[in-house]
View 1: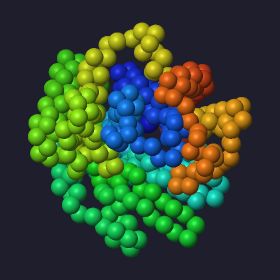
View 2: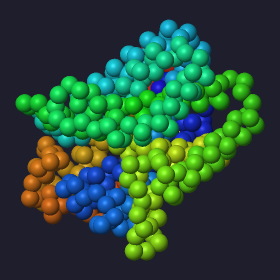
View 3: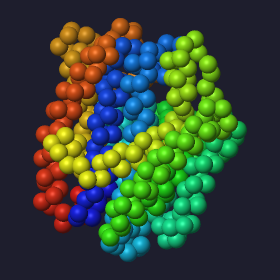
Length: 394
């Protein structure tokens, strides 16, 4: 979601654009699918279907790719600037994103001016990760690589440490690794994205950015991408199949082979387990390898979203939420279940609300098609006005 040098890396923008489009599918499902408003978990193997499970699973690629590429973009941004300039940009951009998550995104998600429920999600995580990275960029790349690997590979060792309650120590641990709820007199706050493993991801993304610096040999980069892909997937298989390490929830043999596969792939996202990160970032490296020199009408479509990710992210949630309200108005349903949307007490009408997965996919396609045009206009505006500093924050 960061401002890149004038010559953008198309494969990075393309990957970002593809996951932005996939992300919209998950959010359309959140607002439109049967029982989605009442907490139906698509990864619950007792109630899900393979189609619903994989609709959720493919969107698992979004958050790791966002955070990882945020680090890569930070490296590319800083490659033509001083470390001091990079520190200033990352720290201020990070604080801005934290503000956006709390104030703007939580209103867009729930349409609640009282902010009774505040969900700290991926934008908050990227913001905190940027603030953390801003101080670390002064270290050598090898030191950063070691820190990033330590956090990503080792954070599951901390799973045994848990806290309960609302004291300062518990809240700090919720933010760092466990996640959890914090309740005040007027607000219910969910820390969905504890940041310790995500800091590791953004650091590794920052180091990864050196593969795309000016003058880096293309053949060497593609070999490294393929090696990273194979290594990530192999390590996933080595630790996941025998349930050795890497996820707090072991897979269990199910009644048939399909659901056994679902159990293997049913990985912990909050916080992101090592297995989760390996199976999401591994294919992302393969994508970058395969799209190094590809350009056609399809890639140009996805590039639009990849070049204005922040704009698209804010707009797509607003459009999806508004579309759900309009759908209820047109169909004669109770639109008030969306105004405000209460995830903990959605009301009786929410129990009967929702559409089939087929309809969800149709709405997703329509939403993405609608968002293409404002996104393209904004992309063109940014390209014409690179000199405006504030655009790097949007």
